Each structure stands twice: as structure tokens, then as C-alpha cells.
Image (cartoon, rainbow, N blue to C red; front, side, top):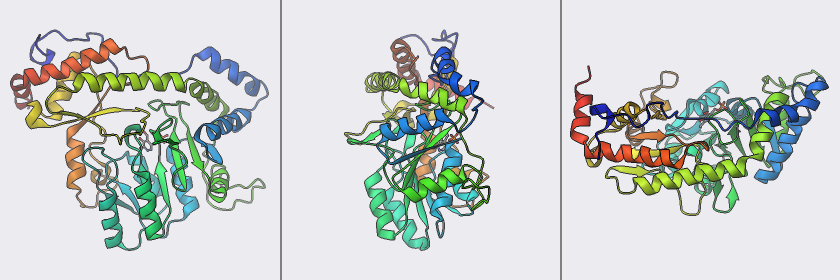
Amino acid sequence: MTQPAIIGGKPLFPDGVPFVRPPAPPLERVMKRLEPSYNRGMLTNGPLVRELEDAATERLGTRHAVAVSSCTAGLMLVLRALEPAGPVLVAGFTFSATAHAVAWCGRRPLFAECDPRSFQLDVADSADRMRRTGDVGAILATHLFGAPCRVEDIEALAAEVGVPAAFDAAHAFGARRGDRPVGAFGVAEVFSMSPTKPVVAGEGGIVATNDDAVAESVRIGRDYGNPGDYDTLFVGLNARMSEMHAAVALESLADLAETAAARSAIAQRYTERLAGVPGIAVQHIDPGDVSSWKDFTIQVDEEALGVGRDALAAALRAEGVDTRCYFDPPVHLQQSHATGERLPVTEAVAARVVSLPIYPALPLRTVDLIAEAVARVHEHAEAVGATQAARP
Ligand SMILES: Cc1ncc(COP(=O)(O)O)c(C=O)c1O
């Protein structure tokens, strides 16, 4: 086995392996799709947006799919529709936008712990915090890295307390909880179509719901709160999706079966190749569930691997492999939301996980070499660790 690049070996990827390469559909197809709307001067919220909403409804099996300009805006509009009476329970281990949406709606995020293996919202801890806090108005749980969270337990908890549950499904287009597609759980689920996601629009989101009132409120809310006569019903946003974004999204959606299969093959390959490496645990996904594999995330056990997560990421960087340490710092410690509250499990997870490159254009041979690079770090753990200790 040759030496890792971080201790003087030859880098495996002199040209670099990017963390993400968005599966943008071919430009000719997008142009062709866009042309009719464009030539009619319909640039936003037109027939392509309707077509995307119909396609998403069919795919997700919900009564409504409302296209919006981003998942963040969709989350804000869903929360506006739900009017939670008190704080909204969210995971500390999620992207900042989950909690931002709560704060923009004038509510306080109540942060709960995550499960140490799946990284998903810890439902027992959530129940505990909700009982202690008393006046929680809603639950907004995230499907982490594209794998479904414990939706039934979360729905049951919400029903027990008598509050709505909604899901931040930013990562999870195409995911399934058992035989049910993510999209129809809770009162609403909100997807993102930004460039790192399984279906891309450039920027965009989909609010999926079976609730007619929520769908109507989001439709009105994405248009400033205007029901059609410019006598605005409430303080809405401009969160419309443009026809250009819808054209990209429609073509991206048409490719989903293929791109999802490619992501899944990559995830399976990483899982196989990393299985024998001490100290590396792949995100736990409940049996029978299907992840969108928006991210492939591993957790590092420093003692067993021989070095910690940061040293592993540095070693991969030296090989030319770009990685991401999502979500570190976790949201409850970020300056925008910090209150001094600590979540020890979440903080430990945030310090131990790293996401590896995964996208349809990533060759399986590259996956093998990345896994090999991880194994080499273990083989040379002492020397690799020393490079970190030597850092200023
Ligand atoms: C969990 C989660 N929620 C929400 C968002 C925000 O999505 P958007 O960029 O479409 O607003 C993201 C973005 O990556 C995310 O990861």
C-alpha cells in the first residue's frame, strides 16, 4: 500500500475530485422545453411551473405540489400556514434554513437531539423536551442526507401533543419510507431543487401536501399574499418559481430514475469498500427505506480509525478529494440561533461525520480509490495524526 499524500505520497487525484457535480440536464433539452413559454413572454409561474407541479404530484402521490423559489421559502410559507402557537421543535443537526424558517415566522426553534447512528431527529428526546417546554406549536423534522427520518414516530408524537408535524425534505426527493414515497407525510413536506439536490432547478422548491388549506395558503403566500385581486390577505413573499427554473427541473425530473440509480450504485460501492475499515460507520438507514443519497455520510470513530474526522478530511483533501463536514457547527451553536443550550449527542455527531463525493457522474473506479484512501489513512494513522498535531 502506498503512502497517503498527506505524508508525502503521490496524490491519487492530481486533477481533484469535486464534492458535487450537479446532474444538470442537457442544455438542448432545457431550451426546447423552455422555448414555448419564453416565446410567449411567459417568464414566471406559467405553464412549465404547472407542468412541474403536476409531475411532482404524480410522482409523490400527494393532492398538491406547489412550486416555490426555494425550500427555505417553502418552509416559511408552510409555517405561516400552520400558524404554530409556540416554539417549533427542530433538530439541532440539520441545515440552518430549517431553523431560519421558524425564526422568520416569529417563532423560536426548540432544538432536539439526533440519533447517534442515523443522525435523524431523536423522537424520544423530542418528546421529553416538548413535555418540559409545554407550549410547543409544531414539529419540523428533517430527512437527513436523503434518508427518511422516523416519520411514524414523529407523526404519533405530534398527534399525542396535538400539534402539526411537517418535514424538511430538502434532501429527499425520490426517497421512500418503506413503500411510501417521502412527500406525503405530516401536514406538508418541502423539497429543495438547489444544485446539490437529487432533482435540480438551479434554485427552487416543492411544497407537497394533502391539505387543501395549506396548499392554498402557500399558493397565495408565494405571490405576496395576493389571492388574485391584489387585496393581499396576509404578509406573503415573492416565492414564485420562474419558467426557466421549471424547465430545468422538469428535465432533471425526467432523468431521476437514472440519476437515482447511479447515486444508489455509488452508495452501495462505498458501503462495500468501507465495510472493512476500522472506525468508519456509514449513516444508518432503517431496513426497507430508500435514501435519495443526496449525501453519502460516514462517521469516524477516532480510536478505531486511529485519527479523527478532521485528520481524515485533511488526508482526503491532500489526495485531491473534496469533502463536506455537514452540519458542523450544528444549528443550535451557530451565531444566528445560539442560546447557550447544549446538545451533547448532536455535537459529538457533528464533530465526527464527513460526507464524501456522490453524484451520477462519479465513476465507480473513483469511489474505489476514495475508499482505498480512507483505508490508507487507517494504515498510516500515526503519521497522518502527527501532521494534524503539527498544525499551528
Ligand atoms: C435540510 C435543508 N433544509 C433546507 C435547505 C434550504 O434549501 P434551499 O436552498 O432550496 O432554500 C437546505 C439546503 O441545502 C437543506 O439542506
